[in-house]
View (cartoon, rainbow, N blue to C red):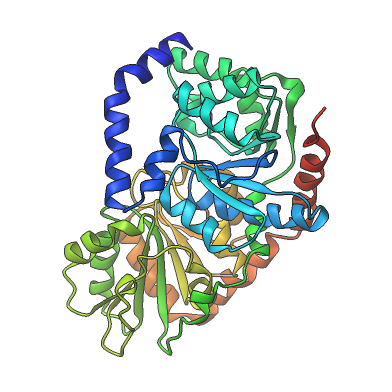
Length: 411
């Protein structure tokens, strides 16, 4: 811990500079102040606190919070996120029991300020976020820390010895770890977590199937054109896929939804497409539109529902993939690329059910795209097979709900 705190101190100017840049570029002063440990007065006290890294984790969490509130409508929830896009998703829900804040960075003074102001009953961290100072300070203040839908990336399990030692120390402050699978439970045990606090409750990402209702913005989406949806893309993936699309010379529309919508303008310039419509600028889809750039937050559900097929980004560049269960919950035909390290369990399950196609290169992607677009029955087989994935969704949701309702009571 001492080395960790020294490193944070040394890199503080860089961290502060990044926070300022994000705040200014997104015109979000609240992001600046809350990351530094200020302006939490509008948050409820004695609430249940859930932390999500970004958009994917928020979408995973929402069905659980709605289920919790249906069983105890006196509960209030504070959701903290690292990203502005994640915060936007929370605020779009417009539910009077959901409150959003940005997570204070892991400086002791900023975390202490948050804990002293909000006084949460307990903290539930989704998936892989391990913050040593946060966990230690929660322990000092008797705030129980739980990691839910717990998973570990390959980068974490193969980290250097000093990093593993730091993570082991942080995990010693955790009260319970609810893993998404036996494999993930074992990974936490090997990292040094107490085996007695680890359980396996299932993968909460399956519950995105229960959160399919479109937002008001999505209800306004309408086009008579057939389209292919490319989602959660990262830098260079848009160009890779657009180059393939031009080679195929299709009449369908290509809709691109980048993982980070603030990249929208730079993507549009890089693609150099004359017939591109940009959602954030209010531009409409016409018969001449080649690309529709969906550079907004929280509007994917209606697009998933009507897409001919979905190409998952984050998998054609070494990012590790994104949540393939969300489009599966809409019974989409899905193609993913070779880089799926962060979603091995989900990918294995879907491949076993023949509910997804994984390609190893852009050349293979071009071939599969051509086959799927020309063969409706081929797409329908994939769509039908996704329905086999979510048979135990309600059980998983109730497992987590019961656990939280049982544990989240002050002694």
